[in-house]
Length: 284
Image 1: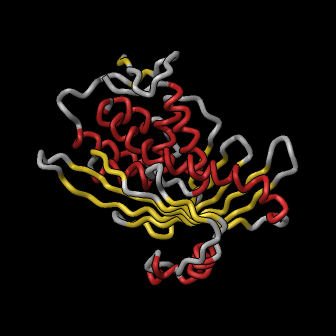
Image 2 (image 1 turned 90 degrees about the vertical axis):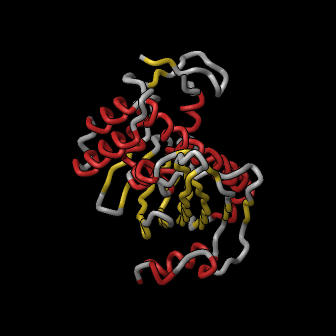
């Protein structure tokens, strides 16, 4: 049986919600990953700037060059086919729907155009993000994030650039694996940020660190659940009218291709009173 429980899903899910609102890409980092603040970085050393559309180059360059926060992650590897991985990465609404079927959440997101999304985490954070580069090995996103404290006058406006680098390989047993890493830059644009920085900076640093540390583990978890419970995954996708039919159809094909002989015909059932991340998930 799979290892997952309600607190594990909810904690990872809330990180996913914030991650989706700050660019919707799920990638993991080791606890030793670097979190830099204010160090100048040459954008050309981070991205192939010539692959960005002209109207985005200066904005992306500014965020990278003059960032307020920077987090560089180490690579994480996990078993997953390239087709399933790219479906989960490229389609935030699909990944969000699968998660929300397992855990209650106020997070909402909608697709505005082919490459633009908008979301709200239900706790004061809203964002609009664009996929600037979307290839199998490189994803670059630009997000405009706004946070308004529900119990204070605190307001934070920021721009976020997220870079996801992905690799694909097979183990000796021919099982496909993904190796990915993420790099994120945040530039706070709020007026009065210097006044807030003394108290707000540790909070922002902690949220940013937690969010990217858990996001990759979440995409790994979701991929395992899709493979273990293919009927459930296809049914959840089929019940999402906000997801275009061609995307749902392609997802059905990928799930069918990845289907294993021992796959469960049921769905994951989150254990209600578990305190261990390795608690069993029962089938039903």
